Image (tube, rainbow, N blue to C red):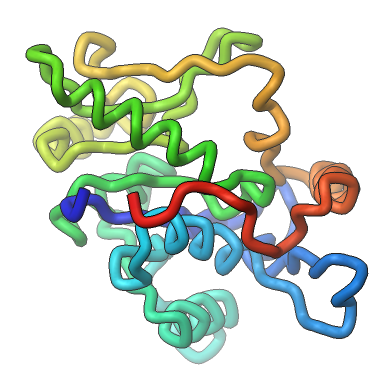
Length: 237
């Protein structure tokens, strides 16, 4: 699996949240309240590092640095550098999440396991299931350019928690050329493999779009005891 890079998507502008959510701090457990928590970006990057076993295979996807007043850009780059993570800058001024995945594939020239920074409940065991699914799928004769989760409750794919193969890059280039920026439609269904999950895994896919989401997730994390600590899971996949 050395061809695989882990990429944290952190280039959004947090418009729905109302302020920079990449800096939100996931608290430590109650018995370690004296220690500083982790930002959402570092928490997500840590999950990928423990899963892949090497910080050099982890990247943070973000907007190009905007100069001295770009507080978010400076902080993200400093955090990444301190922990040995790489940076992948967006190559396009538009395109949303498609722009981020396209830039990650172009920048790393590897298959990319992507996840948004605003999934503070995601763990390496759940992502490990996806990688095992991908590995099994790649042994089959039919080509597969994207391995992702499928939410059976809402009947929808999860294109932001997925592995995109490097061979999918031409499809992304074509979508960019044609200004088709919906990520879920870049890879056609016949070239996708979906790992289905139900309500039992809803906890791990809780995201933070609005302030009320963050309040809810904090309560869920405190209740689960997960917080910013390492969650037991598979390592070095």
